[in-house]
Length: 377
Image 1 (cartoon, helix red, strand yellow):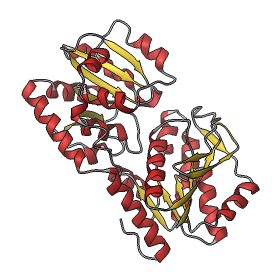
Image 2 (cartoon, rainbow, N blue to C red):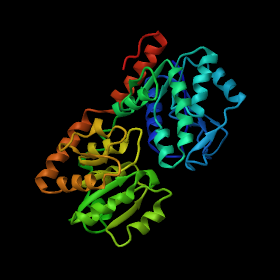
Image 3 (cartoon, rainbow, N blue to C red):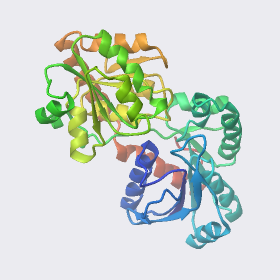
Image 4 (cartoon, rainbow, N blue to C red):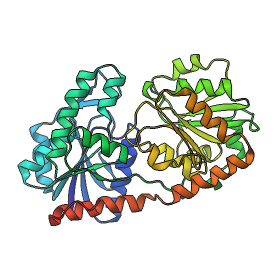
């Protein structure tokens, strides 16, 4: 089987979409499936991943979302895709590059699959450019409906896609590496680092980009109202300077980027994962925290409600409901017994969602596409 994967973002940029794409490519390699990645040029030198070639196409910085790219598909792009002799196309969200994947599939008369990875509509609303969001939603809805299969990462997103007019939407759920992210990685030296030398306090953790839509500033209310709490921020981004000023005088540690074993230790060494994001496509970090035995307090975005069982493995709250976030943290750290019970529940829930199983569901879709069968998930 030969598949071309189109993406709006790729290495060296690191985000949830890139992580899912890299895991997909690794799984395809293990399954003996050949892939070609078509991605906008982010200035990196990476021309292959997991044995799969990467075709970079010209791109400019997105004026609405500076970390993103607007790509320009050229005639040479089509000729390179054609020479790969693909059996099918997979667009990781059809906006710019991904839209070309749907069109190329029609021209080459091969089946197309499109999966949801970018909540462009809510991002545009958040950044106060609703016209851009409306136009993009219409384009992506057309592309989803002209793909043989469309896949959502969660039931919430599935519902949103249907409301926007996408006719048939299956589920391609997200998973976690439950061996990499595990409670056994809890490490006192890491806890000392994250807590800035106060490991006895209740340690709140955020992992991800320090960007406006993550609404990290709202966690200030938790620090001010829940005694004995501290916050560690793992990651970096455009809001770091303003967040340092916002949290000045409060027990907040800006740790920077961590990866591999250090990242696993950071998750497992925390007490509560806090995630007040305004919008998400899924929220992989939630599942990573749960696999690490850390209960989660998250806004109701992406797949949060699919992953978190209320008052069992964590709590969810409406976007911008700071009171709900504060109450969730208070209830988790109220007693050592409560915290330990929720730790175990979070780990148990995450163990049921392994990446290999989720990726096999995608390969099942590929097989069904080529066989002309109905959507299997």
